[in-house]
Length: 157
Image (cartoon, rainbow, N blue to C red):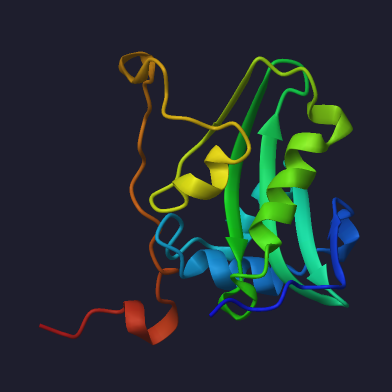
């Protein structure tokens, strides 16, 4: 049984509306950014075109786009809080992204997903035409912040 659509949903790119506690809280537990430090999320948000989905004043979804605004856009960190899934929030986020005036006429859009292919296909995304041309550098996974104080001292030997 699906949930009722979220009637008073607002999608905005106003950075002052973004709730970094919600964004970091979700991303730090996600499969793609597990353990991401808050400072890294803050920097990523600051340097991206971000889309927040709000029900009233509560942020319930998020996505960000990294782009040169001329030829390329990378869609990243798309999420909807579990309490609001099944209500079309992800669809409204993606519709706002692909309709954004600064992202029109781009030659290439990319994203990575493990399990939301059907959502993105509705907005024109498909498997990479030439995956053999894609190259990447993968860094290590995020780790918990290093312990400080007494926890970092070694016991006497």
